[in-house]
Image (cartoon, rainbow, N blue to C red; front, side, top):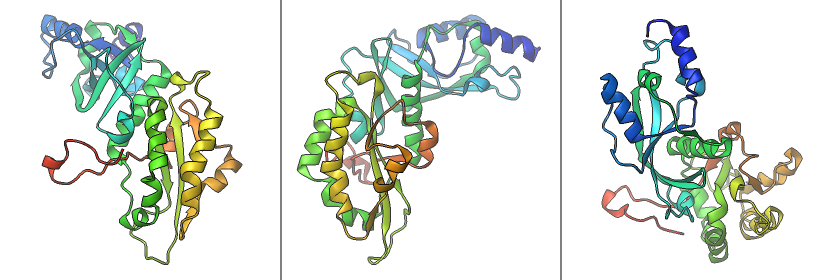
Length: 284
């Protein structure tokens, strides 16, 4: 379509937005019908596409300026268990959408001709909390936290403490992730001090009467924040979070996109550079 205004209006009326969901088979059928090239996609009923590009780019009228749209392949899996997958394995996640569960893997990122969206319609759209969860996971693929060895030497015992790791396993089903704020990613000298803050983000969709976020916050402080605070040459930034109204454990609704500029997800995995040793994460 030559008129950018008309194209934008059609995309808006079809309700294409960031977080729009469509089955791969429906997208492939539209591509075949209109002769639009598309990357190879899984042709089965459980495979779906989630639009990742920002809404303003998705509906942008000029296809010459923005020819492609970014998306993520996911697979419907009623038996999927997110357990602690998002904590120990940053390369995959389980997303809950419309009471369904979708397996998502890091290798499922795709880009295809945006003009294809003019010829079909999404079947649903992610709720804001699920969309934010997916976007945080995507961002974490590029800024995943790797702690300096000197810092690991100082706080490693606290992170590996059996009581803390058992607590993480027990409640991991409710967690969005554990995030760390750090003043320096350099290998500091032994007499230099790291400033570190650590928070736990709980999936808002899973909060219920059985999950007391105040109690979780108290346990998190006792099991990890206090032990880290006792380490020499580590200044605990959590002591200043009270002034910001930031608790040790917060709902994912409170964890804004801007907070990713400060906090980075800390996965409890230690992968070797040798790919043959990367079959399973270590630690939790």
